[in-house]
Length: 246
Length: 230
Image 1: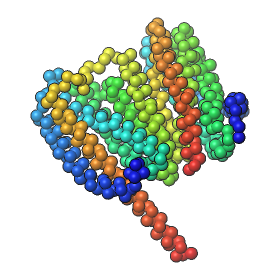
Image 2: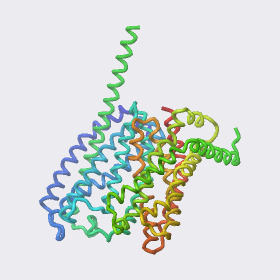
Image 3: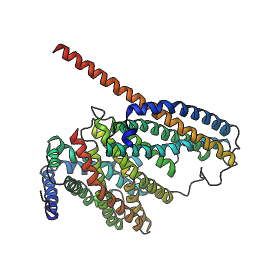
Image 4: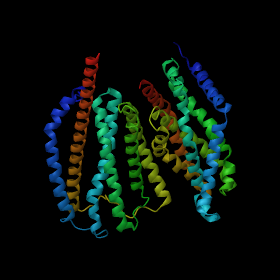
């Protein structure tokens, strides 16, 4: 089944059909989510208008961690079945995941300034997110660290898989470290007792961000496929020239 | 070819002997790591100021951070020389199990680089004004934590084999993995300092090291086979 999906041409054909749909869904849900989130939802009785940062912050945090998992899954496919497309997909996921974790950190610190009075607090969640960002950065750096790009793929894939085994341990140890060093955090962003009017834009934004990231990843993979084709063409024309000379 | 369990032990011990011999012929690596750690420890009081109260708050963390930073440059050398000389290629293609040899390599790195630092830790403890009753716990925690740093380090060294600027890349890949060791290691010594039981942290540190004792040889062997096939 995976072999069937691993064909680049088939990938292009399928994604050509779904890509406009993804773009449409993400635009519509993000517009509605932003409208409901920024204008048509109550402000928090403690946090005031600053709570509206949550509508960007929480979806990015979800996607940053979710995309790391999908990066690791696609790396498993690359290591186990050596599908070149899986490598292209993991290379495409990594920068977008890194972007979302960076967005989480930036919105988190923007929210922290009015709430905590500082841009940065060594909160357990922020610290784990920062470490997740370093895992993304490590993957991107290692996968591009070799003379021929393809040489870094397997090592970087192993790194991503080690990372996904380690992240729960690191998350646990950071929580552990945090409870030992500081009193429990001032408030939780995602409590179970969230207002329904806040839940609707949040869900819309999560859907919108998910479709947006899928759209971007597909775009990224397609670009990389075209890049590969160009490289092959250049190689071919070079060979032709050489054979003419010979 | 028949490779029995007893010959694996012989292989393991002979490789530890080989690595120890190669490294003790020129002690420069060991001495430079020790000197590096000493200098990092000296830098902290100079940066913080000479008052005892300030140093008291950070001393345990300083000890652990300087241990980690001092070890990191030595990690790359674990495999680089053997990779460049082609020794690793030969081992990987020989019937001897690569996993056992890599486990021996990380154990010998622990013996050569980290144990001397641990032996010197009473000196560092004096420099950082630590209490004497803390020293046994420092030695114990660093022995276990140092082993897991070696085990993670060999994964990192195998990851960057043949990479451009591998020596810069290695810390970026390794330090996020080392964070739990720092947390648990400092936790042990802080608990001893305030007089509570350090066992919770100690057991977590042991658990973490055991996980890496199991996965590190296999992961690094996989990575070396990848590096050789390039």
